[in-house]
Image 1 (cartoon, one colour):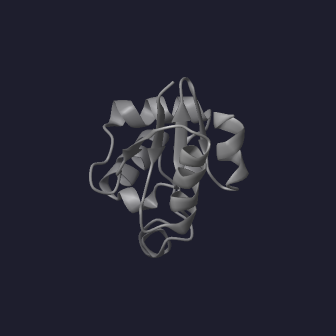
Image 2 (tube, one colour):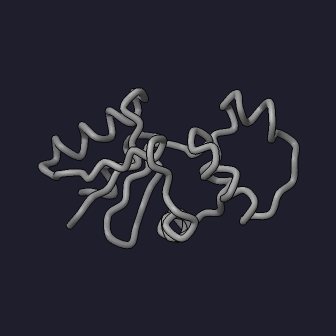
Image 3 (cartoon, helix red, strand yellow):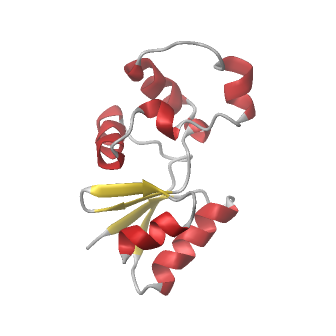
Length: 115
């Protein structure tokens, strides 16, 4: 079964998640979401596989979030637009297998998904 990883190669946790996938004998399709953000439809499908809302995958420690978006109220669709316009606000890594997905923090969640 295809395993996808929303991956940032500069992130150590993302690199660890990719290594776990490969160490378990799987091939991962890397989605370099910072270079090529998903469409709104793809992102909504991803959120449904995670079973979360957009704010649950929002990187609230990111400087951009703190400077521009902290303490502001937006609708879910507005958050999705903001995150797709600023993909570094999307939590990483996200690993997808079939109809399920996990945010790889803690990293053990990746192993639970692919085992």
